[in-house]
Length: 325
Image (cartoon, rainbow, N blue to C red):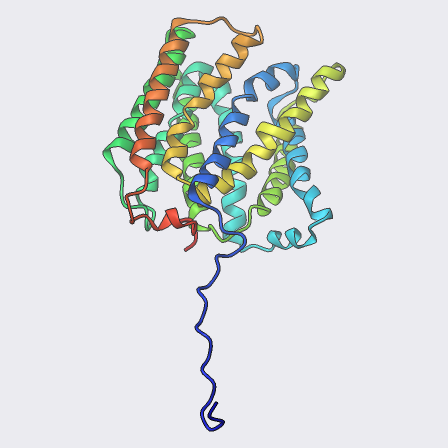
């Protein structure tokens, strides 16, 4: 070796992927877990007795928030996720509390079937709004067609429960239901724009929603506690699942997964919910349920086909995820 000549530096190794990297497919599957949990919402709500809506929201969001905080006992760094700009807090609180407050108002001011159908425009709106996100490649016809098939499935499901009639006297309720759809779809899509915000922050949003729900309960409702162990168990199950873990799973899905496929897949929630009610003896099986299943499955398959990454193309397919700005 020539001492006058510096030794050659070893070739630089390619940078390893961050440990926290998650593939789009994995994140989409995790987000789909929220849809499955939301399909249990009707069953657990029916089993929780006659607890008023805002009181039930306060109780279940408290459980859901504490569920997220529990992991901080062994992972104290998660607590730092609560240090977010006011705009992020506003997005989370308006998304969670605003949606539920408007939904409760819609059910009081309009017939439940019609209010529920209008509010369930949010999956279609997610598909449409996600086309405006940077790096999403625009809206494909198959995504839109899949979302419309899913919407037709939900319409068939609601028609099977009885005729729909939209009356002028219920316009305030319809407006509240439509606002629900825009709020939740907006929250979901805008969450992707703040993809760097850790999912731990959702615990704070849940606790804030519980506090606001308690205030509304004290102002507008009369307290009625669950009766018996089974009703208390249903409230706890709501807080741990559909009003707890589901929001953490959804946050991961919309930030790192295929948000349009999640939007189309969300139409499965009311159908799965009805199937669970049928299996539990709370509702009868109908032709409308079968038609809704067929339409929603067809729509999801169509959207999934459109969502497959093009060979050598999608940056999202390499595990980086499209949520980062």
